[in-house]
Length: 151
Image (cartoon, rainbow, N blue to C red; front, side):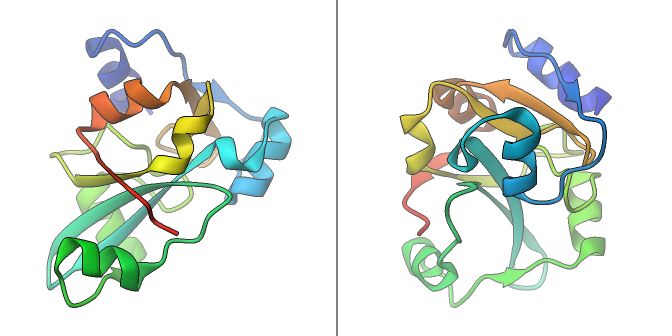
């Protein structure tokens, strides 16, 4: 959580991590806790390409990632869901709280274009009960993400 806030501060993004009363492990739960639309939640999903390459997909909470479509766009045979151990190794964070930033080293990132329709997006802050608000352009800039259609 500290690494995430530090990264936001370093980038000059005026956003503060908000701690919810309890962890939210789904976009629907996060949206309900924040009083926003489920589509405004940026799910941070880690996939594995090949043996050891992590891929972070920031997708709208209203979508499910079409892994075959994304793999084809990337020119790779397939994407597989990462194990909790793989997620922690590459992000330093646990599933349910993976933030778009604050990882030990940069992770290749894709950003769901559908999130652009919202003025405010809510992303995980490094632990399941932490979230922060951010604009689409800011999220794209701070992550260096490539925009894609994921659904």
